[in-house]
Length: 262
Ligand code: 0L1
Ligand code: MG
Image (cartoon, rainbow, N blue to C red; front, side):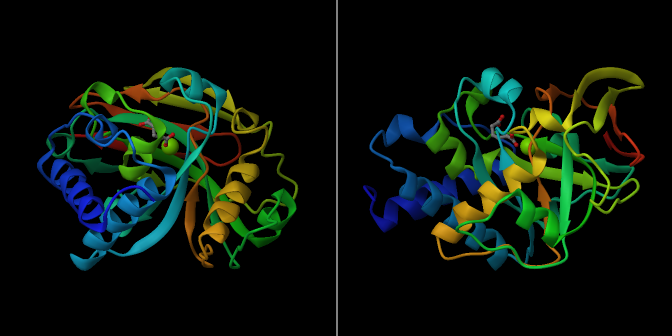
């Protein structure tokens, strides 16, 4: 690590304040170009500790930048990992407060809910499928705290990978007999289809994003508890939304989930 504990806490406070006050900031590596990966995840951990201390609960995890479309859109080359809190969950069909956010975008994702704990190292797609209770449609709302969504990977990790809100719903399905690679998804904004894709867009198979997450956490001495919800990553590019927009994600054989920005 290159940053002192004090700097880590300062950066967590900055990113926390930006999220709470819906204001942006230049990327943190502009001020601390020496920030390394351990520093970046230490800032993310400190951010999480601040939110938990305010009464939030950890409900799951997310993998981000897992599709080539997303990697191309953001000009990066590898996935990143973050966490999900209960206070960020929106009820299926519910309302997301637009004015609480800076410049939100939505991503169509496959959400996994685990029936058993998953632990790396050595986690693979088979272990993920064996531990999965069910999968369901999920829309992630991302809202980078960085000005104009301009960042590098370390800055985005510190910012909990732009996580801000999420909704899951529709018809949960067990993974037996479902080919998650060929599962079709349609994202609609105000009734118009705006993005399409299939599960294979996420690292060839959405379960491989979950295996990478388990291995990443395992390397840090953590695991994914049973009951966790995990967003496996945007299948298409992220789509910008405005106040008043209604967003629906339809997933083959799994119904739909939706939210409104008001
Ligand atoms: O969930 C994601 O794929 C987002 C990762 C962070 C990068 C971004 O804000 O687009
Ligand atoms: Mg995402």
